[in-house]
Amino acid sequence: MTETFPIKVIARIRSDFSEKFGIPRQAGLVEEATARIVFEEEYRNPDALRGLSGYSHIWLIWQFSKAIREDWSPTVRPPRLGGNTRMGVFATRSPFRPNPIGLSCVKLLSIDETEDCGTVLTVAGADLLDGTPIFDIKPYLPYTDSHPDALSGFALQEKEGSLTVDFPEHLLNLIPQEKRKALFALLKKDPRPGYQSDERPYGMMYAGFNVRFTVKENTLYVFEVEQKSTKQGTV
Image (cartoon, rainbow, N blue to C red; front, side, top):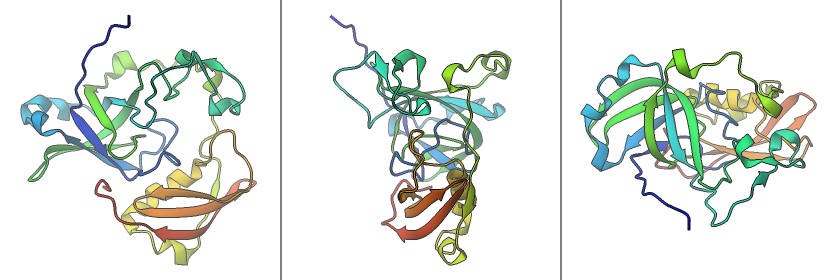
């Protein structure tokens, strides 16, 4: 019989990512993308954050809320390896795990008092879907958490940041000015799954806009921008 323990949701992320497609593959890859951490009412006590302002980065422990399954598999197919090679689940950061728990290191930009949500944290570089439940927050300690000589296994090869973005001005003007820098950074990372390299059209939801594009060789071409209904969680 599997032993279980209760765990509480202390906060939720409010980000510009309303769909999984296009979310950065790892935290910190796109620091231009900001998000807000809004605490559940029970945990809106500023004393719980006393001293946090002295840290530049924090760890978020959260739930893969869109990847919850009753069963689990000991192996998964990492997109990094083309989606065809199976690796042990504990050798990957796949969301499909015995416990769907994620771990992200993000940059702490500010701690603000608000009238409607109490104390709110603004962070940069989060790789979380809007509304994702957060279980815990811990400070990042560089003297013990950083290991520059650590091995990266099969994830060693870095493919991010290789694309040139062709974004026609008349389409770019549809995007709010404050969202453009982050959107460009996301597109440059190539939002397509790691096992896709074709020229088919793709659509990425960001900040309430569906940005449609194709990729040819090393250039991403935006050909359509469609505004969707504004989400409550958009930051």
